[in-house]
Length: 488
Image (cartoon, rainbow, N blue to C red; front, side, top):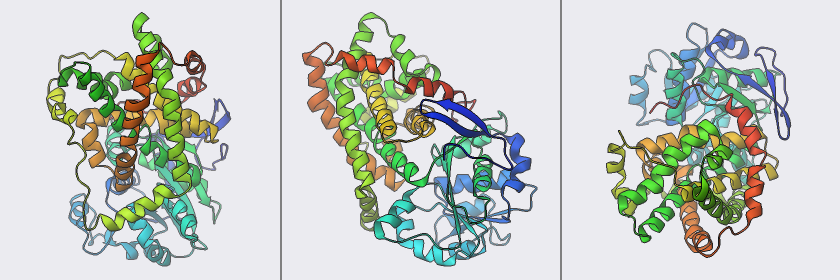
């Protein structure tokens, strides 16, 4: 669905390497159209109070103030989140907080934002509660993948749409609040219409995305979203980042750097100056800005890392597509009830992280060309894999580049990578823990020795980087991003 039409919201066409894509620019000037966009919806139910549940419930309620649409939160009996929801103004007395199945039954649009493991366990109860003619809303394609895995299907007589913000729940809320001061602040989102039971699916999904504050909404389908999202979490967004910084820190320490300098050249470099350079100038200009020997070091690291990263990300994609990663999340849901995951940030690198963050004022950290080459090679490997699998370029660029440099990496910079991995969704935590060590291992065992033995393992790979269509796609899509940086 690269092209579509809307009866309510203005659309525009952008030209990307694979052809035109129809997108919608958001903005608060469109809020008066939300009532029309939510045709037939007078009660929106939000199941769950995790980061996405909280952010979306609050953003929707704020955007729909003054309309006749009510936003309600549904929680499981005895949920520890009830007090937090009440503190944000959702109450039983107002009819905006209640039992999740009661809220499901009363909703015209039901947004199911509970954890993946809980969704896999409880979807039959939720489906049974949803009334005929209502619409289910998802922010992730996990459910579609799970239903295919177990041989089940969506309920009959119910619409199914999706709006998938390209950032954490915290970002969805924080940038929405910034948008009150700077119009256009928000998190980009994709949307999909899986089942359009009444002809209003597209407009309903666009209304939802605009109400969340998305400055730019682009189309996808739930299978593509699920694959790119789960692979991205295990790849450049979380898993690969964790493996890369651990491996580089160890390499720099072995070369004689003290812990502080090794941290500055590895983790601090990626989450700080490298992310900022890609966000501000793009991938190609990052390399072009490196002079003489530094560019040669970048090229050497890039050419050594790209084929290895491609192999590993291809393996991740195959595992996700085959359902292996999905099954591991479901199994972990049962296991984690008995034994919570241990914290991940116990390695020597994290002992200096707090001190580095406290010492940032007044410190300028230059881009380390070796670190940049490894990181950019991994990012481009993910981009090229998604392109080869037929994903739309808006999805490729958002899932592989913009979400990394404009949402997750700034958050990691403020908190640290270990903190982020220990405080994101169970699905993401599991994926990062499984694949981060794999990235670390292939870097230490294959990539680093290759750069120690040759000038540039394959110069043709650097030429291919320079002409990669991702540069042109990023240049177009970067113009549609939020106009402010993420608030931390």
